[in-house]
Length: 339
Image (cartoon, rainbow, N blue to C red; front, side, top):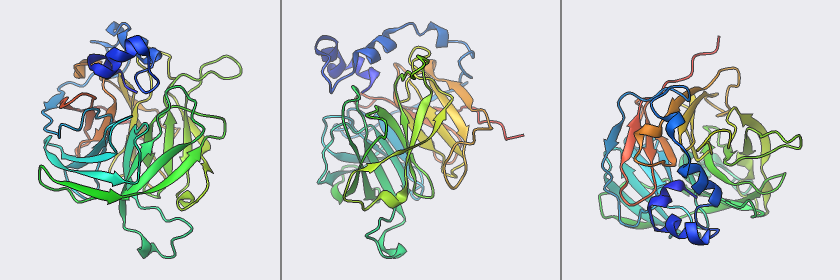
């Protein structure tokens, strides 16, 4: 869950109750820690020069805007979800902050929705032809697990709905894939889908190896061929990122977004954005190219969670939990080309 709830009712209650569906104690301690090392300095990344705040005019039901994903087929439209314990709703908004409709995702439960992505509609073994599925889908990740106790998690896939006028309500159907990690439960809030349909999941919290050394954020993959499986599939560990959760205050991985052209991956923590060079088809990070790092502590009223690309401008859009918390658009550096 997210730290910005410390300004709202759930985290206030969590201070006293520490309910498993609320913010964790570790989150609260991290966010209440000293932010001074991040502010007014580029030692933790380049500080965006002129962040732009956009008023959000969302439905009253959008109270925990913890994930956002930009449509690749509807210019200026992005999708968002509430996180744990809320109704299973998909919200459409535009980059001017306006409401563009809401859809109830039929047959689903919002246990801990923490991630969203757009990508091609994957074909499972039961699909017999490419024409059996439309080209673009929205993926919703019920992937959160604060205490790392859940044996399996769920990702939903639904046909991307067409944005509507303010006030529109509808219903959409979804298919689901249930999966587990090969090494036991993980808390994940960052997920993205590559142009080839592979899904990637990035671990959020501090992990310590057998040698006692803190580990980098792990990257797990679900192949597109797993869609359509009736059984729980196993995500495969394929990489790790040069982000060590817990190595600095507020350094927990809370969201990820692949650029519209598939060439860059933005990974955010509560304090920074890391921009990686990626293979434009597979979405895999190009490890030979160091990431560019952006310090976003001073850009938000309090630490947020979500990140999405702001259209095809090369800028990034930040979202935060809380009703009608503004969108913040930042201009972060891109990684240098591989030598």
